[in-house]
Length: 232
Image (cartoon, rainbow, N blue to C red; front, top):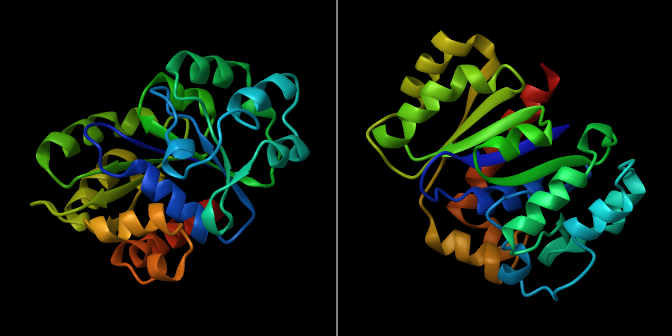
């Protein structure tokens, strides 16, 4: 299964959510940075520059993306999350993704993409599920509702509401259901939890202090919802 995490506007915590979902994923998975603005995982977790990376994976797996090639391109984030990190330079990220034959990706491990902002790059990933993270406020929900029918032509749509706002998950789910039927699911809400997000960065996504955070616990419901969508 391939799952792409992205946002439409603002910075609602896509990267943190993707990392924590990878830490809680029930099957073997690889987190792959696919943000066309540039990657941040290497900098965030103090990883040395250079290969293995998205760019080295694209160079070695240009014609066929095998399970062995995926694992070989991974770095280990704190507490064991396997990640293919990308360059901070947008042009290198775009070139690497264009060269990578994601259509031939193996069934295992599952691929979780940190996709950054929703756009042309997301459709290139060929995700089975596109997860859009949005604050429950009008300026973010309006474009979500407008784009929903377009997204579900190629993938199922999952929505995660981040932080507080005047709109509840039930209201958003009802609107999405009218447009997309069962092809769109509100996976849940994650709290505004700066301490939990900082613990995930400083201590690692699977560290004991991280697992006690409200954010980490909420991510469990998101992962459970994605697992249920997989079975549909």
